[in-house]
Image (tube, rainbow, N blue to C red; front, side, top):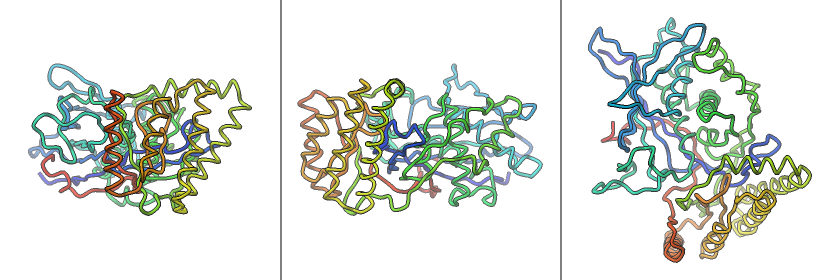
Length: 443
């Protein structure tokens, strides 16, 4: 049977919110976001059948993990409800994957609305393979496995320890892009064009917020699509009125939101944003974790109760964040330690006033220790803060890497903790098409 839809591969990067934690929730302020070299990859291929046999099934595999297959049926819901996705049983149980299921429903509904079956662009059976770069997870590869770019892990996905690089946003973005690229002709959707990226951003933001059960700031999806950027969030009410998938009118309303043009007041600017020559953004996995949702609620509660003090602090922090961005753009490496130190001081003050461990004492001690290593310009506890990661700006050389590894090894031994430098680095590029030979042995 001839293939109607091409096999395509798409990847999207993880992220680190280097500056702008909590500020990025408010449209008055911005966040300084960097994409990362660790990517979530999705390969989309047609399921071949014998002539005359038709399957209405999408199979999603994450072959790096145990028991990581999800199968879905799909049908057109009445009254403009879009494409309704139903998970099918695999083996003796059903293990839900809300991010995958929601993304499928949103992407298939949007495609069916903008290119309905009457146009000749039908939705057929497909297999989607998800491959994550190793730095998304703390645990080592399965016994006896030789770790490559995509390690084979000895646990189910639900038991994998994430390193906090933004895997859900990168997954939703790459999954959405692969579905649109697989099913739609390039004259309707092309992820390499500004129009294609805009469609992808709006659709992935919609699906990601629905899967999370809340309208977040969206900086992680923006980084997955556009890469490193200064980000100002969209107005939350844009997505707050979307019906549930399958509900009457969902299909038309989703397409109107995605193609909303001026309604999307998001601002994404990546002009000139990069690491200075010879400087690398590196991440440390602390393998501990924190409840960022609870932390955010507490910070916002403090902000509401002490608006005058918090506004002064947030304005000062915005100015320090802008200064850090300016230092990076200008390549003023000798000014990096002071710029980073100013941001950290204000973040600690926010934590003190809100009684939230944004930069906990343990992380302060760790950052001070590694910042004293020759070739390290400084670092921050990124995003919402807590205990699970630190981001460092370092000299991009092997000598610095060796000194830093040695210091972290001593630290882990002395403190009885486990802190390691990840291989991931900052990266400017966002979503991109990939050659299929990158995934040899997996597809």
